[in-house]
Length: 160
Image (cartoon, rainbow, N blue to C red; front, side):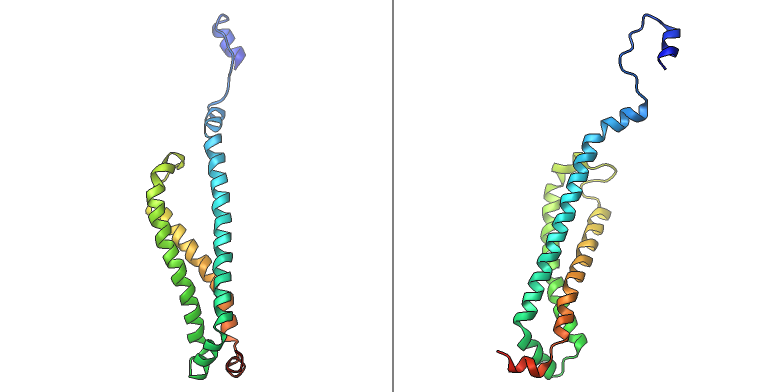
């Protein structure tokens, strides 16, 4: 490249030659790094939320073993208990989702300069995030719910 420019005009100073691909790559390097860090922190936050929901649901099931035994002795099926426990966890996740969406809409303008290809209020981004959150919450609720349906009603009624 330098030789071609020198052939055209030897007096033209050449200080920094780079391809357009490298110029574009360098110009988006910092925003890309920031986006990767934010994504990493978001994944860590999702992991913490999953552990938190699992912990709350496991504690709830452990504290309500007697109630689960009573429900089963009165005729509740394992499916009913499973739906009950998962429903409670999904209710918590739904409340968190509503609060998160409202806060995201409020904070969307602050991060709009870091977003490439989507808007701060992109419905697909919000829908995808909501679906991932609800699926993760469902997975976090499943293990405590399975533990709840394994409760022996007779043993649960004797415990106190």
